[in-house]
Amino acid sequence: MTRIKRLLTHPWLALAFRLYIGGLFVYAAMYKINYAAEFSNTIASYRLVPYWAVNGLAVFMPWTEIICGALLILGVRVRSAASVIMAMLAAFAVAIFVNLLRDAPISCGCFHTIEDPISWWTVLRDLTWLGMTWHVFRFDAVLQADQLFLGKLGRLES
Figure 1 (cartoon, rainbow, N blue to C red):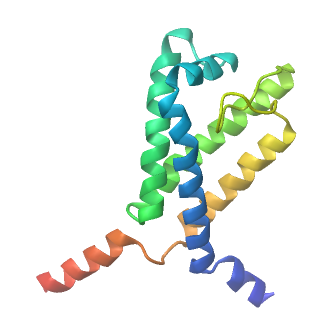
Figure 2 (figure 1 turned 45 degrees about the vertical axis):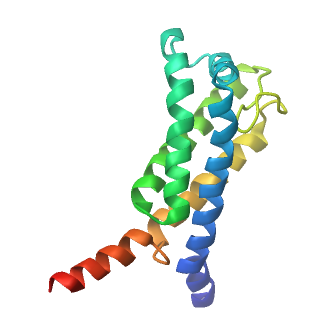
């Protein structure tokens, strides 16, 4: 049992999750940034955001995704980036859950505007990514650029 716990809490597993989630969010944001109008239609199809906020959200959300994803990949402000990503993943899961209860025939809009319709697997996928991001938040300690540089800065000041 101790081996399993050590394996599940190992910093190198957190690094693998960090790189995966970071790459995933950068990849997801690239299409949305290039096609903000289509992405705004996807946001509107969820019917959870007031109409006056849809376009702003369609511009703001992908840039937040790409910045947080890049921060995770680079290992800079990992806990902050993971916190923002966890909040986004929780919001995505809730939005999909609500629309599944409504029986809305919409696509996720996660990576492209034309995708398979949302399903319970989409919620499960988002919750899995949420768990991976929580693991990064909790256990990541390997190859964090800000700790490497701040650690050297602290030694120089002494």
